Length: 348
Image 1: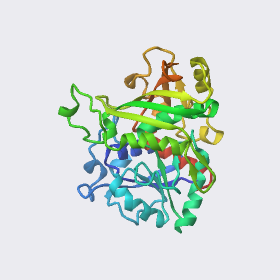
Image 2: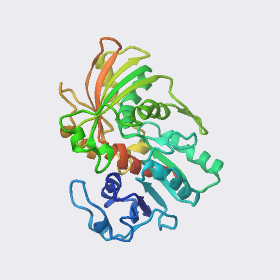
Image 3: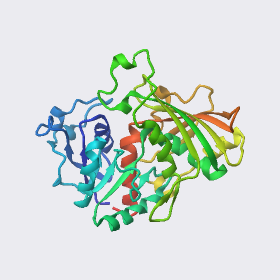
């Protein structure tokens, strides 16, 4: 396969750095450009980026000049780690100019003609790009990955919806600091503390899974027909979002039946063969105290969703704990996987 030139918009931020790290040595993509803020434009990536990830900055990346986030970049595919307020106008401009935009921003996720994708969950929704191009009259496209907290929850709900149906879901999140970007939450706010409010997060967790778990007829998505109620909290963990889920099933099932269903969950062949897909999309832990961010967030290179404490609930049917790496599967890695899938389907 011919390697495609890709650019990373907002490459100096925490998610932008994840894109650069995950694209290092990628078999299908080569990074031809990185962009940053006015403060960093004109400098080398090494000079303009304060590297905050484990491991060293790739040598090749350090030598790239930081460009402004403007049209004219030498790339076919654009990975966007832009803040949503910038993505609102910049991403459609890039798509209209013929770039294939894969966005981590929330600005366009809920647009009717924009695919909101987790490849293991709704690969069939990718065809919306054809409708998008037709309606908007552009040759490029915008494809989004979902909110980082919604990622693991949605993956875990997929086999339950298919096997038993869902009526109601209650979710309480314990979200890592890195989800706020860098420098993130002030130390005086988070030390010896839990912050029980993250702007916009509860709305995203209540809406985005329903779009991804809904039915796509090729032109639009009909959201899944169940309700989600969410509480979102910021906690003093570096990486890895934990969500405690309680669910009412349409068809009651025992904890053992649910565990067996989750363990049997296998994504479509086209998804399993993608370079960024892990050997196991969903892993179920039997220990009473797992999953834990520090011990389990790197499962499958950070691309596997980990579930544990699956048990009967005293009010509804089921409760469990789900963990997903928020800056890998829930951000840059998920967006990279989306691009691989559309490329494999011939949609880009």
